[in-house]
Length: 338
Ligand SMILES: NC(=O)c1ccc[n+]([C@@H]2O[C@H](COP(=O)([O-])OP(=O)(O)OC[C@H]3O[C@@H](n4cnc5c(N)ncnc54)[C@H](O)[C@@H]3O)[C@@H](O)[C@H]2O)c1
Ligand SMILES: O=c1ccn([C@@H]2O[C@H](COP(=O)(O)OP(=O)(O)O[C@H]3O[C@H](CO)[C@@H](O)[C@H](O)[C@H]3O)[C@@H](O)[C@H]2O)c(=O)[nH]1
Image 1 (tube, protein in one colour):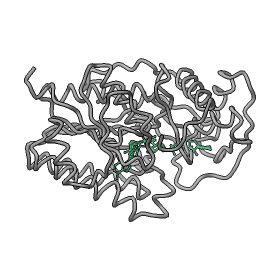
Image 2: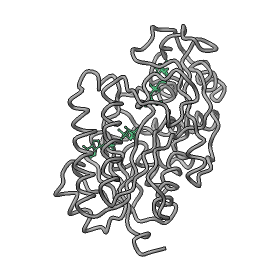
Image 3: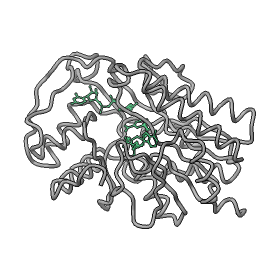
Image 4: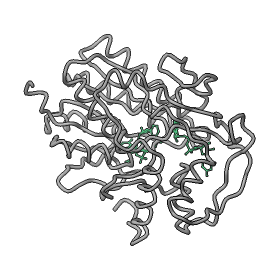
């Protein structure tokens, strides 16, 4: 190990849902971590004690340069961004600004400061509506909404910057992230929840009257959409594995993050009922615009490239941890941006 292998990791968006779980995983490994977050959707209380928070914008290059220098940053993990697909359709330029323009500033600041390791939160949304499953990384990218395009453009900036400069990166294309830290230290807190398991957890805990299934006439086994759900703590471990890969001199990579196993909406909801022992009020509604019928990750490449063994690859574990977190949030509800 060289000295730089011990360098501090900067986690942008570390006060958010996924970033906060990665901060926990890094800390559990004894890593030094600094978070940069503007708290637009994140919360200070999501950070463990002792993790410095630089409150600011990821597109602020002067702030980035100061933060890199004052904390001895050796790797950047980039989670900060906007994530709601329908909102990206209504406000595309806001998404290109927050996800693409500000990522450009961050990558440029890294190149200028000689920071040579970068791990990026990408998404299965870059694939659009692929017609063959499982989806491996060779599948042509063809996003169908501005969110997916805004993330793919950042992948391209990283690819081209890595070819031209002393920069290596891992772009992790997440499939459906769900669940919460098994120790109850973090979980999802959305002002406006859109994700299926989060909404199911809110419904079963009485915060919503009912859940709507967005379409049951898809060409899938039970007519509802199929997704590959990955536990957020396994995803966090994949980031630590990607960090080790880059520190060991590994090449730049684009890797799917999922388990390679799909569950339908109905199967997920049945699991929520089984775990709670309570019926979930639900009704069938129309299809949601832009939903692909089925997305299942090809996971051969991540298995071959990273030293990563999922520990929670089981729908019951994912659902149970999401429910436990939701119940914890009820007593009492933490104030926004606390
Ligand atoms: N949640 C998913 O299912 C999913 C799936 C695929 C990819 N991703 C990607 O993972 C990343 C994290 O998603 P999440 O679910 O944790 O969302 P989140 O909203 O909980 O976290 C995003 C964090 O970034 C911060 N942020 C946003 N814009 C910022 C800016 N300009 N400057 C500084 N901080 C800023 C927010 O305050 C928040 O803490 C995103 O890049 C998202 O695109 C998420
Ligand atoms: O109230 C709800 C919410 C969702 N769904 C359905 O549940 C499935 C999963 O939806 P959701 O949890 O919103 O996730 P996705 O739309 O699949 O998108 C997530 O997963 C993608 C990767 O697969 C990422 O790119 C996105 O960022 C992330 O939001 C879809 O079929 C939805 O139509 C419902 O039926 N009712």
